Image 1 (spheres, one colour):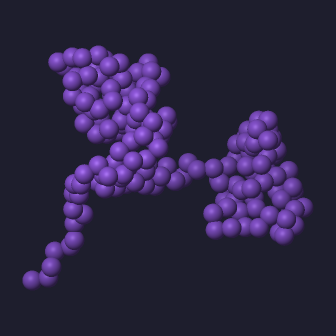
Image 2 (cartoon, one colour; image 1 turned 60 degrees about the vertical axis):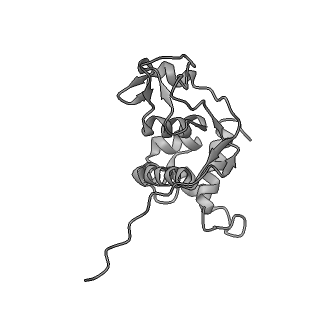
Image 3 (cartoon, rainbow, N blue to C red; image 1 turned 90 degrees about the horizontal axis):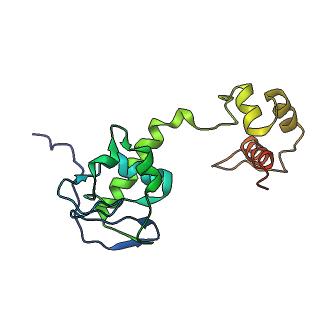
Length: 176
């Protein structure tokens, strides 16, 4: 009989890696958001934990609990999301926690790959170009045609058009 396909084993290991990522309290006895003690705390859903990491760069450790009033069908309520604060400046991870985070980030990136801003494939309409750069698409094309290839090299991760688009976006909002 042929061998079965390899499955990704659930790795469990001791907390061995400390990363400079802020985190909340972890515990079963008190809410990771409001720090209240209570008998009816709920485990924070993985999606709510991930969204907190994406939006606020704060890790809510797996198994953390919160008051039911902080949760809604989309994760945390708007009020709870605004009130999330970190307690620690460093988070400890094990192999399985890091793999879970990487897998979730990868799934999120793949799910949203068509929503990325792309100055190369013209997936942006004229309104998008105006909002991002202050220019119409035709004006952006004209500007790009006047910049020599030697001025801004394309690399593996960004093109000349992307560099110009980002630069114009930054200068449109006074960030440069």
